[in-house]
Length: 70
Image (cartoon, rainbow, N blue to C red):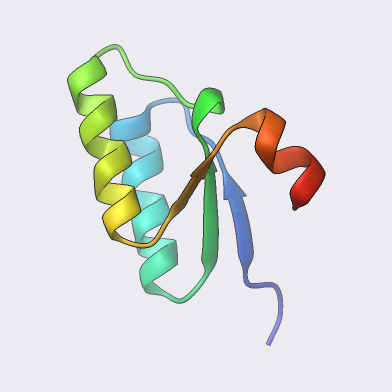
């Protein structure tokens, strides 16, 4: 069936990252978003995006936690 794991990061958390990560999770992929490799100029938008992704089944991680364990 091919690869089913995504490790993702994006320039803007709320725009680039959230919708792509949520869509991938809805399609059945195992998605990990590397939070410290994303960003936002609006802290409220960023926090809201993290919560939306978590509710959709996206795993949130950091570079220190993701890299040795993937």
